[in-house]
Image 1: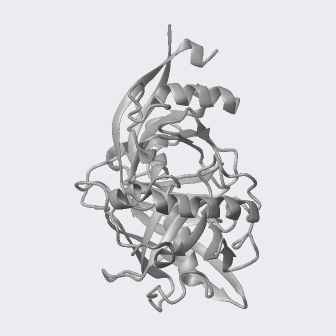
Image 2 (image 1 turned 90 degrees about the vertical axis):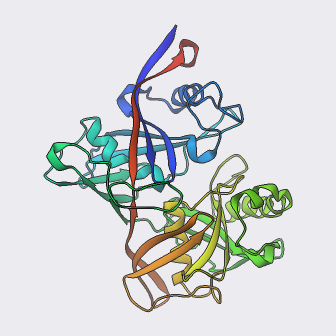
Amino acid sequence: MNKNIPCILMRGGTSRGPYFNRNDLPEHRDDVARILIAALGAGHPLNIDGIGGGNAVTTKVAMLSKSDDGWADVDYFFAQVAVDKQEVDFSPTCGNILSGVGPAAIEMGLIPTNGEETSVKIRSTNTGALIEAKVQTPGGSVNYEGDARIDGVPGTAAPIILNFMNVIGSKTGALFPTGNALDVIDGFEVTCIDVAMPMVIGRAADFGITGYESREELDENKTLFEKFEPIRIKAGKRMGMGDVTQSVTPKFGLLAEPREGGAIAARYFMPWTTHPSYAVTGSICTGSCLMVPGTAAEGLAKLPESNPTDLKIEHPSGAIDVVMDGQFENGEFRLNSAGLLRTARKLMSGDVHVPASAVE
């Protein structure tokens, strides 16, 4: 017999996946992992026996619950389900899937609407980050239609504004977990930085690419992945994250000078495939890397002089804009908030069916 579990399938930003009420899933993570593997069809490159989409951006999961935090309304627990392996990583978070948390929480009845626009205060339980999402709710229902456009998603939709706070040292507790703005690992200069998402960031030219390649060109470049994966693993240990061989964090990023009027051109790796656009949390981390002197971005970035500043990060599908309110003073970087415009769309709601063996 199948076990039926309610969920909402939603596109959040440039990612997609099921959104669950945490109360509909088991308490223990090993039990949750078995259910998510079965639901998404992990272990097959097409996820043919599940609702995954055969790509890391379409095998993401959000689990929501009412928060007991004094500030937040909703707790957001994220899981990255592997595509061709039966594995689940609970260590990262995802800012694109976060884009759908506000709408999904309202749809699930976890939070009531409040006028034409509802503010949903979210705590990411994976990282401790606090995020305010502003969702359009005319007539007491979530509005998904509008004129907002984000690169990497066709068409337009209603805008969702995300404001991130408390994101420095999201997993490691430090801006630079190694104690350095620039490290040399296997002869390559990289910045190991943790803001919203721990990342290892290098210069594209050092790794033999221009930094302007398409996702498809990069995914075909197996030599590139073979070059940076040992560096990522060693960096993970230096960052205090232990053995990251099987973990999707830290993520890897490569930078080049902008050529479309942005602050930087960047490619983001998840880490074993190339992101088709750019991660929300990755954009905050990359933006922070641009703003702090002495990092791998120095000499490449073209920064506006204003603060808050709008940083445009050029990526394979276009660009992502992140508004950074922060400053580097007296040797310390302080990030007050980081804001982005995203969109989301409810694709379907109902029950996902998993074999009874997955819940026993």
